[in-house]
Image (cartoon, rainbow, N blue to C red):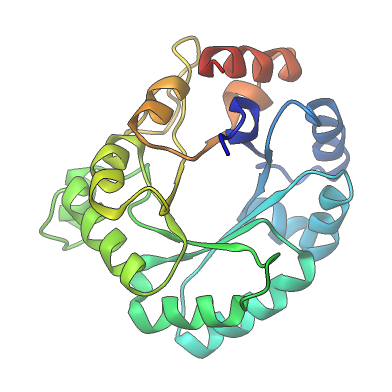
Length: 234
């Protein structure tokens, strides 16, 4: 069944202001597929903040990027299940055993969350990887980690749209690709280096798009969300 354009959009609630997040969520309900809450939100507002957002009826991407020994990550995933996220994630660089532990902890119920692996952060380019001692291009490192993630049983990866076409071709249609760093042509790039427009990202193979400031920083977030949906087409 085809995914509606609006359902592809997950808005990043990168804030410590719960009331502001709830107000924004209410204004976007029915216009987007869900919201992403990350470390800033979770550190300030904790599980109760996530529950408050979930009660709006919006699917939640719990973007905490777990990265630790397998037993610790498994425990974190089990704890996260109480929040009923639609998506949660781990760092692929944590290795195969850690990713398998996360998948096992998520269970096999029909309503279990999608478990995704983060490949290379969209703020990092080739020079950043080299400085960190990784002798690989961003594109090659993403593919390497994505293959490891699929072999480890995760449902998909978080990647840049610039790698999405290659990943889709090599890893198949059922492997989910969640793409941050999305900027419409009318929005500023900010601190993201590997970015594309929403329509280009979907054309390249993205399943879900994580969009922050082009919507959250807009004078009218609902209008911005609808504008992006229109750009995605039917």
